[in-house]
Amino acid sequence: MTQAGIILSDTSKSKDQMVEIPGGEIELRDDRTKLKWIVKLDPFLLGMFPVTQDFYFEITKESPGTFKGSRHPVETVTWKDAIMFCNNLSFNTGLNACYSVSKESAEITFDAAADGFRLPSEAEWEYACKAGTTAIRYGSLDSIAWYKGNSKGTTHPVGQKEPNAWGLYDMLGNVWEWCTDIYDPDVYGSYRILRGGGWSDDERSVMATTRRRSHPLKFKIDDLGFRIARNMTGKTTSR
Image (tube, helix red, strand yellow):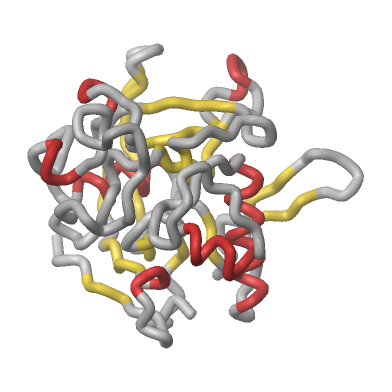
């Protein structure tokens, strides 16, 4: 597997930096159902950091974070808030939106082939988090993540802990991250997946393999944010 390359925005602002993730495959598992499955992945782009409060405000003119700080990850956002941010960022940069929101109903459809910004799939998220390894973490927990044992009850500015081998920061800890996927429609309906663990979680929850889910339109909390992804389109910048 080739080493992932750093893709910088035209403005070279760290909030807009994305990392080129090479193609490959990942085995996922669901501890609830004991199922395992393999997902093959094409190369894609993933945000180097979770979306920060200053970046979120730049696009939405809103400041929903409970713990204020321009470089802190945005949190207290629903899944719909996150995908609307992605759509607005796509519109602002002349790209095609990945999500369509019906005005007549609450239905949201996803175009996986669109060239705009989106949330990662959970397979992409776990694959990128592990960065070519099979371990549940990419380093010692205190050196890579803000969690209950060291966070002092708050989020922290992104990028202060060590990155993984592919240059991604805060994949574990600080805030959970929404993924684009539905968790289990037969049991949980429209509930979407969240990954990574947050500042208030015990060590056992802050792992690359931990899966949680919640309501996409209603659930928001002070340890849940997101990071952006994008299909590879031959371009070398995110802006």
